Length: 115
View 1: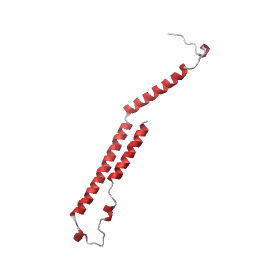
View 2: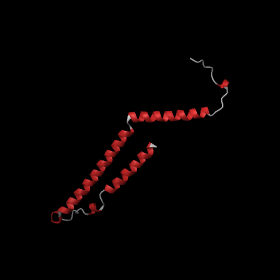
View 3: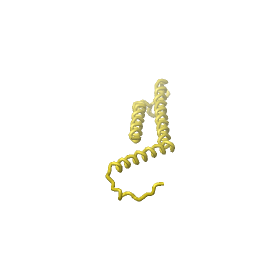
View 4: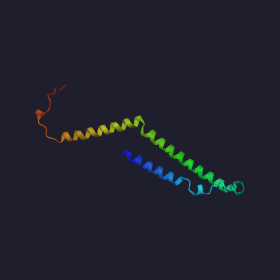
């Protein structure tokens, strides 16, 4: 049950990363070595590139933060103990129901003296 939630969370992170990734046109817009970049410099282009990089870094930081929170939550010893106890109780309940539904002869029981 928990594994499905973790997978869904990872899929959401990948989709968010794809949406926040810089477009490929920013790479093509950079000046080549043959051009004189001092004559071709425009402040709007530089600001656009800076904004694109900033958005990409913010997306990476958010993704890393979410993954850190999920890791801490998933490895919390208190939560892991509670999950293990619930699984054990469920397993014991399932095994107990199976024994109650079966016909058992009195000779099959060990002789146990009551306290």
